[in-house]
Image (cartoon, rainbow, N blue to C red; front, side, top):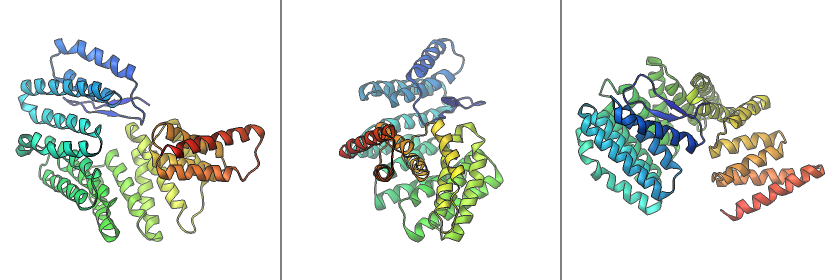
Length: 378
């Protein structure tokens, strides 16, 4: 798997991380060096655009002071490029919002909320012009802002983001992307809703996505359909859930053909498999689940919920050592959620109830020590 995917056939190409692991600093530094050498004699603004992407990627793993230096330089390149590229100034302004959001994401607690509250005034002029690229960037801000809040405050941010998506659907050039984004906002909003409100949001999102895929099939919309259908299945009665999970699985298979979406598609397939097997009367298909888990381990997926599910599958197959190792690695990577720690405790509890060879006993005791340390550090 490549580290990054760079969009082709675009004047200002998108740069996307393919795997879940950070891109190596050596790779980013080498790329940055080449771009800096290219910029003085470049005949287009692609090199500074890519340099901004590199600076943002490097800032992710930098210490706060170095990260701020990188954000400031990225903003300087954006300002210089915007002045020289008036025709695409909205695209550069959207990138400036991206940089601002990256900076905010590194902050914590009250400082983060204070920065978010200051963003509307910082970008008021650009937002007032209503250019699609700027509005899409602002939807990202509102979605993150909603995740930082609770209850009605979070719902208000999601409602604002959805309203912008509806507005963007009026632009023919952005209608498809806006429909996809609106469905994602509805799905994320459903995670904090209850009962009928949650199901209504998911049903609306599913309808939007199915219509979009029927009109313009793509791997992105296939994955969105799969993830949304999985979420619907999780709140539907068993018989309806089976249909939703089948719909999710079919589209996850389709999305998997796109290399940049393979890890996410496999995670969705594993989640569907686990949910389906936990429906009343459904058989356990251990071979399928283990195969998916093995592939995800090879891709070094680190999403806490996925890692927990992988550990549960190894536990179900009595591979206690591998299950415990996954939990320990997640803890060492800073991904030990309460649910994952609970699964780790269950692994160790069941492990102590079976007989072990001396070598296995030593591994078991080490796993239990690491669990005790991880639990104490929560």
